[in-house]
Length: 305
Ligand code: GLU
Image 1 (spheres, helix red, strand yellow):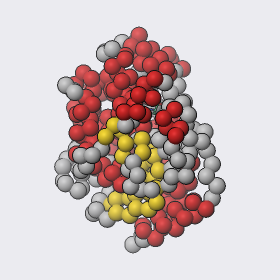
Image 2 (cartoon, rainbow, N blue to C red):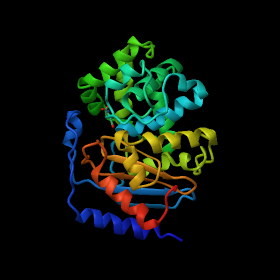
Image 3 (cartoon, helix red, strand yellow):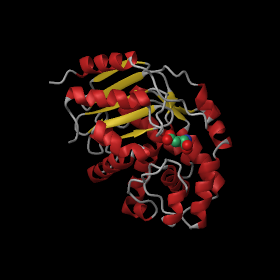
């Protein structure tokens, strides 16, 4: 049997000894204040064995990892109709790229680029009475923690600097793929990005995707197994923007990153693991997060391939 505890500890210390390259993003001023040296890891297995190390209990801005929760929530409600408004192809472009939307007639390439998540937020505004609180309740239920909150300072900072996201939203509105007021859509998008969670909460809350849609901790069926399989497929091909191929090549697991420095990765039927380190590489993914997960799956010898 693989000794996860021993491998996580070894790889954590190996990565810690190496130079911490990259840069904390500054286009959301509040995120630039974070301490660069933070580094935490938490893994939870389907049979509720967990391993934590470093700053695993410290909350950070989940940013684009929130796109996974929003997709799961909306997909369960809309079923396959969802794919009329957002595609499932890797983008090969930056996460906030405007160019592709023109060529694709306002249909975002996938739900994990900003344009796709903005459409998902538009749908949330259509199907929920109070999308912010319904999404928080959903995430709190998955993590079994009522203390999960939005950092309003980060949300505000993001709203004040959401020029590109607003441009994407307005552009898609011109194609008829946004139904609500673009300001309301961007407000919800920024709110969800500004949710704070720690590595342990993230690993627990996305475990259902490693368990055919069922939360193994409370046996609640969150999604059908077919939908969980499809979300994992999109995570594998689109979870890391235009570095998705590289992550799949180096790590071999479906996963999702956020510009807050978090990465969540899943090994279906086995575990969910979260790494947090705020310095990002040039593609917007955590530098140490990528390093850690590459070495981790190499040393465990486990991946989906
Ligand atoms: N709030 C960020 C943005 O819209 C999310 C991007 C990310 O985490 O990758 O730019």
